[in-house]
Image (cartoon, rainbow, N blue to C red; front, side, top):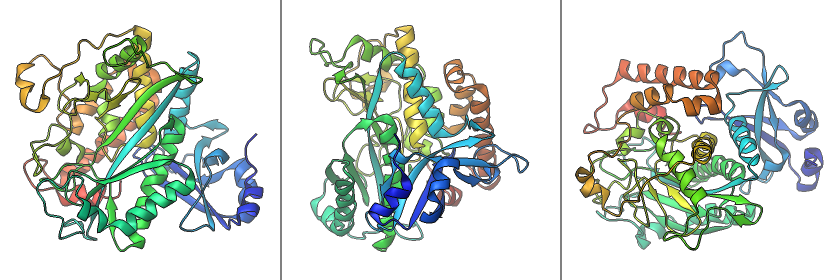
Length: 441
Protein backbone atom coordinates (compact mmCIF):
# COMPACT_ATOMS: atom_id res chain seq x y z
CA UNK A 1 0.00 0.00 0.00
CA UNK A 2 1.53 3.32 -1.07
CA UNK A 3 1.93 6.13 1.41
CA UNK A 4 -0.88 8.67 1.53
CA UNK A 5 1.02 11.81 0.58
CA UNK A 6 -1.61 14.14 1.99
CA UNK A 7 -1.23 12.42 5.35
CA UNK A 8 2.56 12.48 5.03
CA UNK A 9 2.37 16.23 4.43
CA UNK A 10 0.25 16.72 7.53
CA UNK A 11 2.50 14.59 9.72
CA UNK A 12 5.78 16.05 8.50
CA UNK A 13 4.50 19.62 8.01
CA UNK A 14 5.27 19.62 4.30
CA UNK A 15 4.04 22.75 2.48
CA UNK A 16 5.21 21.90 -1.06
CA UNK A 17 6.17 18.84 -3.08
CA UNK A 18 8.64 18.68 -5.95
CA UNK A 19 7.13 16.16 -8.39
CA UNK A 20 10.17 15.24 -10.47
CA UNK A 21 11.28 13.15 -13.40
CA UNK A 22 14.45 12.73 -15.42
CA UNK A 23 14.38 12.97 -19.23
CA UNK A 24 16.56 11.05 -21.68
CA UNK A 25 19.45 13.49 -21.25
CA UNK A 26 19.34 13.12 -17.48
CA UNK A 27 17.93 16.59 -16.85
CA UNK A 28 15.88 16.74 -13.63
CA UNK A 29 12.46 18.30 -14.35
CA UNK A 30 9.97 19.24 -11.66
CA UNK A 31 6.81 21.04 -10.68
CA UNK A 32 6.40 22.60 -7.27
CA UNK A 33 3.00 21.50 -5.96
CA UNK A 34 1.31 22.93 -2.85
CA UNK A 35 0.17 20.38 -0.30
CA UNK A 36 -3.49 21.23 -0.93
CA UNK A 37 -3.20 19.63 -4.39
CA UNK A 38 -1.05 16.59 -3.60
CA UNK A 39 -3.91 14.11 -3.23
CA UNK A 40 -5.02 14.76 -6.81
CA UNK A 41 -1.43 14.74 -8.05
CA UNK A 42 -0.78 11.40 -6.37
CA UNK A 43 -3.73 9.92 -8.24
CA UNK A 44 -3.52 11.68 -11.61
CA UNK A 45 -0.01 13.11 -11.79
CA UNK A 46 1.42 16.53 -12.61
CA UNK A 47 1.08 17.58 -16.25
CA UNK A 48 4.07 18.38 -18.49
CA UNK A 49 4.57 19.19 -22.16
CA UNK A 50 6.94 16.49 -23.39
CA UNK A 51 8.28 18.59 -26.26
CA UNK A 52 9.72 21.02 -23.72
CA UNK A 53 12.08 18.28 -22.47
CA UNK A 54 14.53 15.84 -24.08
CA UNK A 55 11.97 13.16 -24.90
CA UNK A 56 11.61 13.38 -28.72
CA UNK A 57 8.03 14.63 -28.68
CA UNK A 58 6.29 17.38 -30.67
CA UNK A 59 4.19 20.37 -29.61
CA UNK A 60 1.16 18.46 -30.95
CA UNK A 61 1.59 15.56 -28.50
CA UNK A 62 -0.79 15.18 -25.58
CA UNK A 63 0.22 16.20 -22.10
CA UNK A 64 2.26 13.64 -20.22
CA UNK A 65 1.71 13.15 -16.52
CA UNK A 66 4.35 12.50 -13.89
CA UNK A 67 2.83 10.02 -11.43
CA UNK A 68 4.81 10.30 -8.19
CA UNK A 69 6.11 7.18 -6.49
CA UNK A 70 5.17 7.77 -2.86
CA UNK A 71 7.83 5.30 -1.72
CA UNK A 72 10.51 7.59 -3.16
CA UNK A 73 9.47 10.48 -0.88
CA UNK A 74 12.34 12.50 0.60
CA UNK A 75 11.87 15.47 2.92
CA UNK A 76 14.57 17.98 2.04
CA UNK A 77 16.83 18.01 5.13
CA UNK A 78 17.90 21.61 4.41
CA UNK A 79 14.34 22.83 3.76
CA UNK A 80 11.85 20.68 5.62
CA UNK A 81 8.85 22.46 4.13
CA UNK A 82 9.55 20.67 0.83
CA UNK A 83 9.15 17.02 -0.09
CA UNK A 84 10.78 15.48 -3.19
CA UNK A 85 9.23 12.68 -5.25
CA UNK A 86 10.54 10.62 -8.15
CA UNK A 87 7.89 9.98 -10.80
CA UNK A 88 7.03 7.78 -13.76
CA UNK A 89 5.74 9.38 -16.94
CA UNK A 90 2.36 8.45 -18.42
CA UNK A 91 0.63 9.60 -21.60
CA UNK A 92 -2.83 8.66 -22.89
CA UNK A 93 -3.22 6.14 -20.08
CA UNK A 94 0.05 4.31 -20.78
CA UNK A 95 3.58 4.55 -19.43
CA UNK A 96 5.93 6.58 -21.62
CA UNK A 97 8.40 4.01 -22.95
CA UNK A 98 11.18 6.58 -23.16
CA UNK A 99 10.76 7.63 -19.53
CA UNK A 100 14.14 6.53 -18.08
CA UNK A 101 12.63 5.47 -14.75
CA UNK A 102 10.03 3.40 -16.60
CA UNK A 103 12.84 1.87 -18.67
CA UNK A 104 14.60 0.80 -15.48
CA UNK A 105 11.44 -0.60 -13.91
CA UNK A 106 10.79 -2.64 -17.06
CA UNK A 107 14.28 -4.17 -16.84
CA UNK A 108 13.78 -4.88 -13.13
CA UNK A 109 10.56 -6.70 -14.00
CA UNK A 110 12.29 -8.84 -16.63
CA UNK A 111 15.10 -9.68 -14.20
CA UNK A 112 12.53 -10.64 -11.54
CA UNK A 113 11.29 -13.46 -13.81
CA UNK A 114 14.54 -15.19 -12.92
CA UNK A 115 13.81 -14.53 -9.22
CA UNK A 116 16.69 -12.08 -9.16
CA UNK A 117 17.10 -8.49 -7.98
CA UNK A 118 20.03 -6.25 -8.75
CA UNK A 119 21.60 -4.33 -5.91
CA UNK A 120 24.00 -1.55 -6.66
CA UNK A 121 25.95 1.34 -5.28
CA UNK A 122 27.39 4.34 -7.10
CA UNK A 123 30.45 6.52 -6.51
CA UNK A 124 29.58 10.06 -7.60
CA UNK A 125 32.58 12.32 -8.11
CA UNK A 126 32.18 16.09 -8.42
CA UNK A 127 34.21 19.29 -8.58
CA UNK A 128 33.72 22.44 -6.55
CA UNK A 129 34.44 25.28 -8.99
CA UNK A 130 34.23 29.02 -9.44
CA UNK A 131 30.93 30.44 -10.62
CA UNK A 132 32.29 31.11 -14.12
CA UNK A 133 33.77 27.56 -14.24
CA UNK A 134 37.21 28.88 -15.15
CA UNK A 135 38.97 27.28 -12.16
CA UNK A 136 38.47 25.19 -9.05
CA UNK A 137 37.05 27.03 -6.05
CA UNK A 138 39.98 26.40 -3.68
CA UNK A 139 43.05 28.32 -4.90
CA UNK A 140 45.22 26.54 -2.31
CA UNK A 141 44.39 23.07 -3.69
CA UNK A 142 47.44 22.77 -5.96
CA UNK A 143 49.22 19.48 -5.21
CA UNK A 144 50.10 17.29 -8.19
CA UNK A 145 48.77 14.29 -6.24
CA UNK A 146 45.92 15.76 -4.18
CA UNK A 147 43.97 12.55 -3.58
CA UNK A 148 42.96 12.11 0.10
CA UNK A 149 44.56 15.47 0.98
CA UNK A 150 43.31 16.09 4.51
CA UNK A 151 43.87 19.85 4.47
CA UNK A 152 41.98 20.37 1.20
CA UNK A 153 39.19 18.12 2.48
CA UNK A 154 38.86 19.96 5.76
CA UNK A 155 38.80 23.38 4.10
CA UNK A 156 35.43 22.18 2.75
CA UNK A 157 34.37 20.62 6.05
CA UNK A 158 31.25 22.79 6.41
CA UNK A 159 29.80 21.69 3.07
CA UNK A 160 30.93 18.05 3.23
CA UNK A 161 29.55 17.72 6.76
CA UNK A 162 26.19 19.17 5.77
CA UNK A 163 25.83 16.84 2.78
CA UNK A 164 26.88 13.82 4.85
CA UNK A 165 24.59 14.82 7.74
CA UNK A 166 21.72 14.97 5.25
CA UNK A 167 22.47 11.44 4.05
CA UNK A 168 22.66 10.20 7.65
CA UNK A 169 19.29 11.82 8.38
CA UNK A 170 17.79 10.23 5.25
CA UNK A 171 19.00 6.76 6.29
CA UNK A 172 21.30 6.22 3.32
CA UNK A 173 24.18 4.93 5.42
CA UNK A 174 27.04 7.18 4.25
CA UNK A 175 30.37 5.77 5.32
CA UNK A 176 33.20 7.87 3.87
CA UNK A 177 33.97 11.23 2.27
CA UNK A 178 37.21 12.08 0.54
CA UNK A 179 39.13 14.52 -1.61
CA UNK A 180 39.55 12.77 -4.94
CA UNK A 181 42.41 12.51 -7.45
CA UNK A 182 41.89 15.93 -9.05
CA UNK A 183 42.34 19.32 -7.43
CA UNK A 184 38.92 20.52 -6.29
CA UNK A 185 37.33 17.07 -6.66
CA UNK A 186 35.38 15.13 -4.02
CA UNK A 187 33.56 11.84 -3.58
CA UNK A 188 31.02 10.71 -0.98
CA UNK A 189 29.94 7.10 -0.56
CA UNK A 190 26.75 5.62 0.86
CA UNK A 191 25.38 2.09 1.22
CA UNK A 192 24.28 0.03 -1.76
CA UNK A 193 20.61 -0.84 -2.15
CA UNK A 194 18.07 -2.15 -4.66
CA UNK A 195 18.94 -0.58 -7.98
CA UNK A 196 15.77 1.53 -8.32
CA UNK A 197 16.33 3.04 -4.88
CA UNK A 198 19.99 3.65 -5.77
CA UNK A 199 18.96 5.40 -8.99
CA UNK A 200 16.46 7.63 -7.16
CA UNK A 201 19.08 8.48 -4.55
CA UNK A 202 21.63 9.16 -7.28
CA UNK A 203 19.25 11.71 -8.84
CA UNK A 204 18.59 13.33 -5.49
CA UNK A 205 22.27 13.31 -4.48
CA UNK A 206 23.24 15.41 -7.48
CA UNK A 207 20.41 17.85 -6.73
CA UNK A 208 21.41 17.97 -3.07
CA UNK A 209 25.12 18.54 -3.72
CA UNK A 210 24.41 21.36 -6.16
CA UNK A 211 21.84 22.97 -3.84
CA UNK A 212 23.98 22.85 -0.72
CA UNK A 213 27.06 24.01 -2.63
CA UNK A 214 25.14 27.10 -3.74
CA UNK A 215 24.10 27.66 -0.14
CA UNK A 216 27.81 27.74 0.74
CA UNK A 217 28.62 30.15 -2.10
CA UNK A 218 30.14 27.43 -4.29
CA UNK A 219 29.27 25.70 -7.55
CA UNK A 220 29.34 21.90 -7.92
CA UNK A 221 29.64 20.08 -11.22
CA UNK A 222 29.48 16.40 -12.17
CA UNK A 223 30.71 17.22 -15.69
CA UNK A 224 32.96 14.37 -16.93
CA UNK A 225 36.00 16.51 -17.72
CA UNK A 226 35.71 20.22 -16.87
CA UNK A 227 39.51 20.65 -16.85
CA UNK A 228 41.64 18.95 -19.50
CA UNK A 229 44.70 18.49 -17.25
CA UNK A 230 42.82 17.03 -14.26
CA UNK A 231 41.25 13.64 -13.61
CA UNK A 232 37.61 13.51 -14.76
CA UNK A 233 34.44 12.79 -12.82
CA UNK A 234 33.66 9.09 -12.87
CA UNK A 235 30.54 7.41 -11.57
CA UNK A 236 31.58 3.85 -10.84
CA UNK A 237 28.88 1.28 -10.04
CA UNK A 238 29.19 -1.76 -7.78
CA UNK A 239 26.93 -4.60 -8.89
CA UNK A 240 25.51 -7.82 -7.44
CA UNK A 241 22.42 -9.99 -8.03
CA UNK A 242 20.32 -11.35 -5.18
CA UNK A 243 17.66 -13.98 -4.57
CA UNK A 244 16.08 -12.82 -1.34
CA UNK A 245 18.93 -12.65 1.18
CA UNK A 246 21.27 -14.73 -0.97
CA UNK A 247 23.98 -13.00 -2.99
CA UNK A 248 23.97 -15.00 -6.22
CA UNK A 249 27.28 -13.43 -7.29
CA UNK A 250 29.12 -14.95 -4.33
CA UNK A 251 31.17 -18.12 -4.68
CA UNK A 252 33.82 -18.54 -2.00
CA UNK A 253 35.43 -21.33 -4.01
CA UNK A 254 36.33 -19.01 -6.88
CA UNK A 255 39.70 -17.22 -6.85
CA UNK A 256 37.92 -13.83 -6.98
CA UNK A 257 34.81 -14.91 -5.09
CA UNK A 258 32.45 -14.72 -8.06
CA UNK A 259 29.91 -17.29 -9.21
CA UNK A 260 29.41 -18.59 -12.75
CA UNK A 261 26.27 -16.45 -12.89
CA UNK A 262 28.33 -13.36 -12.01
CA UNK A 263 30.83 -14.08 -14.79
CA UNK A 264 27.98 -14.57 -17.30
CA UNK A 265 26.47 -11.23 -16.25
CA UNK A 266 29.87 -9.58 -16.46
CA UNK A 267 30.38 -11.11 -19.90
CA UNK A 268 27.15 -9.55 -21.16
CA UNK A 269 28.33 -6.11 -20.08
CA UNK A 270 31.72 -6.59 -21.71
CA UNK A 271 30.22 -7.76 -24.99
CA UNK A 272 27.96 -4.69 -25.14
CA UNK A 273 30.31 -2.11 -23.59
CA UNK A 274 30.92 -0.15 -26.79
CA UNK A 275 27.17 0.40 -27.22
CA UNK A 276 26.56 0.99 -23.51
CA UNK A 277 28.99 3.92 -23.73
CA UNK A 278 26.19 5.84 -25.47
CA UNK A 279 24.28 5.66 -22.15
CA UNK A 280 27.21 5.61 -19.72
CA UNK A 281 29.27 8.34 -21.44
CA UNK A 282 26.49 10.36 -23.05
CA UNK A 283 28.09 13.74 -23.75
CA UNK A 284 30.68 15.13 -26.14
CA UNK A 285 32.76 15.99 -23.10
CA UNK A 286 32.64 12.37 -21.85
CA UNK A 287 35.28 11.35 -24.38
CA UNK A 288 37.88 13.67 -22.94
CA UNK A 289 37.79 11.24 -19.99
CA UNK A 290 37.60 7.94 -21.94
CA UNK A 291 40.94 7.01 -23.54
CA UNK A 292 42.42 10.11 -21.91
CA UNK A 293 46.16 10.77 -21.66
CA UNK A 294 47.74 10.86 -18.18
CA UNK A 295 46.58 13.81 -16.11
CA UNK A 296 48.42 16.07 -13.69
CA UNK A 297 48.24 13.34 -11.02
CA UNK A 298 49.83 10.78 -13.36
CA UNK A 299 46.80 8.67 -14.31
CA UNK A 300 43.35 9.32 -15.76
CA UNK A 301 41.74 6.52 -13.68
CA UNK A 302 39.36 5.92 -16.61
CA UNK A 303 39.26 2.84 -18.85
CA UNK A 304 40.38 2.66 -22.46
CA UNK A 305 39.91 -1.02 -23.25
CA UNK A 306 37.19 -3.57 -22.59
CA UNK A 307 38.82 -5.76 -19.98
CA UNK A 308 38.38 -7.03 -16.45
CA UNK A 309 40.68 -7.87 -13.59
CA UNK A 310 40.88 -8.51 -9.88
CA UNK A 311 41.48 -5.55 -7.58
CA UNK A 312 43.11 -3.49 -10.34
CA UNK A 313 41.80 -0.02 -11.20
CA UNK A 314 43.35 0.20 -14.66
CA UNK A 315 40.64 -2.03 -16.15
CA UNK A 316 37.05 -1.29 -17.14
CA UNK A 317 35.81 -3.83 -14.59
CA UNK A 318 37.53 -4.77 -11.37
CA UNK A 319 36.58 -7.29 -8.70
CA UNK A 320 37.46 -5.59 -5.41
CA UNK A 321 35.81 -8.13 -3.10
CA UNK A 322 33.99 -11.47 -3.31
CA UNK A 323 30.36 -11.26 -4.43
CA UNK A 324 30.44 -8.07 -6.48
CA UNK A 325 32.22 -6.27 -9.27
CA UNK A 326 32.85 -2.60 -10.01
CA UNK A 327 32.05 -1.17 -13.45
CA UNK A 328 34.31 1.85 -13.99
CA UNK A 329 33.05 2.95 -17.41
CA UNK A 330 30.39 5.51 -16.43
CA UNK A 331 31.03 9.21 -15.85
CA UNK A 332 29.27 11.97 -13.96
CA UNK A 333 26.95 12.88 -16.84
CA UNK A 334 25.36 9.41 -17.00
CA UNK A 335 21.58 9.33 -16.56
CA UNK A 336 21.07 7.51 -13.21
CA UNK A 337 18.22 5.38 -14.60
CA UNK A 338 19.86 4.54 -17.93
CA UNK A 339 22.99 3.63 -15.98
CA UNK A 340 21.14 0.95 -14.00
CA UNK A 341 18.86 -0.23 -16.81
CA UNK A 342 21.77 -0.55 -19.25
CA UNK A 343 23.64 -2.77 -16.79
CA UNK A 344 20.61 -5.04 -16.35
CA UNK A 345 19.83 -5.28 -20.07
CA UNK A 346 23.40 -6.24 -21.02
CA UNK A 347 23.84 -8.47 -17.98
CA UNK A 348 20.61 -10.33 -18.72
CA UNK A 349 21.87 -11.03 -22.21
CA UNK A 350 25.00 -12.49 -20.65
CA UNK A 351 22.90 -14.69 -18.36
CA UNK A 352 20.65 -15.91 -21.17
CA UNK A 353 23.56 -16.64 -23.51
CA UNK A 354 25.79 -17.96 -20.70
CA UNK A 355 28.59 -15.72 -21.92
CA UNK A 356 32.15 -16.37 -20.81
CA UNK A 357 34.11 -13.12 -20.29
CA UNK A 358 37.39 -14.95 -20.79
CA UNK A 359 40.37 -14.85 -18.50
CA UNK A 360 40.98 -11.74 -16.40
CA UNK A 361 44.05 -9.63 -17.10
CA UNK A 362 46.34 -8.68 -14.25
CA UNK A 363 48.52 -6.17 -16.08
CA UNK A 364 48.68 -2.39 -15.74
CA UNK A 365 46.43 -1.64 -18.70
CA UNK A 366 47.60 1.98 -18.82
CA UNK A 367 51.15 0.91 -19.68
CA UNK A 368 50.71 -2.60 -21.14
CA UNK A 369 47.79 -2.07 -23.51
CA UNK A 370 50.08 -2.46 -26.53
CA UNK A 371 50.66 -6.07 -25.49
CA UNK A 372 46.98 -6.80 -26.16
CA UNK A 373 46.33 -5.59 -29.72
CA UNK A 374 43.26 -7.81 -30.12
CA UNK A 375 41.50 -6.33 -27.08
CA UNK A 376 38.43 -4.30 -28.00
CA UNK A 377 38.76 -0.57 -27.37
CA UNK A 378 36.10 1.77 -26.07
CA UNK A 379 34.65 4.37 -28.47
CA UNK A 380 36.81 7.40 -29.06
CA UNK A 381 33.93 9.88 -29.31
CA UNK A 382 30.17 10.19 -28.88
CA UNK A 383 29.49 9.68 -32.58
CA UNK A 384 31.21 6.32 -32.49
CA UNK A 385 29.31 5.17 -29.41
CA UNK A 386 25.98 6.20 -30.96
CA UNK A 387 26.80 4.25 -34.11
CA UNK A 388 27.56 1.21 -31.96
CA UNK A 389 24.25 1.62 -30.13
CA UNK A 390 22.41 2.01 -33.43
CA UNK A 391 23.56 -1.41 -34.60
CA UNK A 392 23.23 -3.20 -31.25
CA UNK A 393 20.41 -5.76 -31.39
CA UNK A 394 20.69 -6.62 -27.69
CA UNK A 395 19.84 -3.11 -26.48
CA UNK A 396 17.26 -2.59 -29.24
CA UNK A 397 15.48 -5.75 -28.13
CA UNK A 398 15.71 -4.67 -24.48
CA UNK A 399 14.39 -1.12 -24.85
CA UNK A 400 12.59 -1.15 -28.19
CA UNK A 401 13.43 0.51 -31.50
CA UNK A 402 11.26 3.52 -30.73
CA UNK A 403 13.19 4.42 -27.58
CA UNK A 404 16.63 3.75 -29.07
CA UNK A 405 15.82 5.72 -32.24
CA UNK A 406 14.58 8.67 -30.19
CA UNK A 407 17.71 8.66 -28.08
CA UNK A 408 19.93 8.48 -31.17
CA UNK A 409 18.02 11.26 -32.90
CA UNK A 410 18.31 13.65 -29.95
CA UNK A 411 21.96 12.88 -29.30
CA UNK A 412 22.91 13.26 -32.96
CA UNK A 413 21.16 16.63 -33.01
CA UNK A 414 23.26 17.58 -29.98
CA UNK A 415 26.47 16.57 -31.78
CA UNK A 416 25.41 18.58 -34.82
CA UNK A 417 24.87 21.63 -32.62
CA UNK A 418 28.34 21.16 -31.15
CA UNK A 419 30.07 21.03 -34.53
CA UNK A 420 28.29 24.18 -35.65
CA UNK A 421 30.12 25.98 -32.88
CA UNK A 422 33.27 24.05 -32.02
CA UNK A 423 35.89 21.52 -33.09
CA UNK A 424 36.54 18.57 -30.79
CA UNK A 425 40.16 17.84 -29.93
CA UNK A 426 41.14 16.05 -26.74
CA UNK A 427 44.41 17.97 -26.65
CA UNK A 428 42.71 21.38 -26.81
CA UNK A 429 41.07 23.25 -23.93
CA UNK A 430 37.54 22.31 -22.94
CA UNK A 431 35.23 24.36 -25.17
CA UNK A 432 32.68 26.92 -24.09
CA UNK A 433 29.95 24.78 -25.71
CA UNK A 434 30.91 21.82 -23.52
CA UNK A 435 30.80 23.95 -20.41
CA UNK A 436 27.49 25.59 -21.32
CA UNK A 437 25.86 22.25 -22.08
CA UNK A 438 27.45 19.94 -19.52
CA UNK A 439 28.45 21.80 -16.35
CA UNK A 440 25.00 21.33 -14.83
CA UNK A 441 24.46 17.77 -16.05
